[in-house]
Figure 1 (cartoon, rainbow, N blue to C red):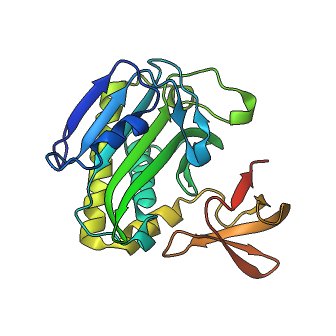
Figure 2: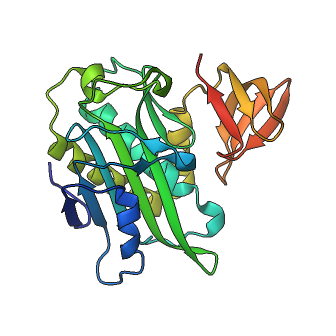
Figure 3: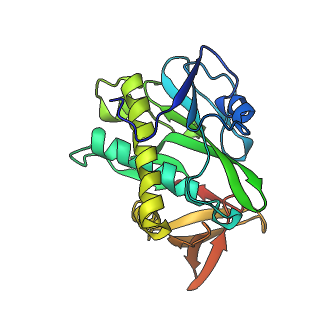
Length: 255
C-alpha cells in the first residue's frame, strides 16, 4: 500500500543515532513538505522525557516525519499532533491487523500504543514555534514489529508476538503515513472535537481505578481517568475531586 494523500520526500538511512535528531536539519526547509526519515537501524532513539527507545536492527519501524501545518496551530493547541498521530496508529492497527477486534488496542496518554496491556509503540513530537504559532512539527515513531526480546521493566511486546501475522515493514510504514495524513486531513475538515472524541474513546484505563505517581508531591494516588481537556491535560478523578495533569507531572503504575 503506497497510497498517500500528499507526496512524501523519503530519506532512507542505513544507520543513525536518532531519526528525530537528523530530521531537525529540515525544520527551516521551505522547498518540500512531508519529509520522512526512515532507518532500519536506530541506535540511540529517544522517547518521551528523554528516555532511550530500545530497538533491534531490522526488526522494528523507526522513522520521523517533518511537516508544516496546513491549518494554523497556536502554541496552546500543541497537543493536537499527539491526538492525530496516536489516532492514526490506532486506526492502522485496528483496521488492517485487528479486524475481528480480537486484541484490545489502546492509546496510553499522551501518545503510547498499548495492546493487551503491553507497550508496542511510542511517539516523540518536537515542535518549532514562531510568534506563538507552530511552524514545523517533527513526529518520531517507534513501533515494535518483529522484536522478541524485551527487558521486563519495559512491559513491552511486538506486533508479531501479538497478531501472529506475516508482517511487511514496508507495507506497514506506508499504511501509518497514509492514516496519519488522513487523520490530519480530517482534523482540518472537521476540527479538534472530531479527533479528540476518537482519542478519548480509546484512552487506556479510562473509567478504571488506577494508581498514579505524582512527581510534584512525591506521592501516589488512587484515581480514575475521566477525559482530557481542550489543551491536552489529563483529567483524573480522586476522592470525588478532579485533578488536571500535564504529561511530565504524573506517571502511570501498571499493576
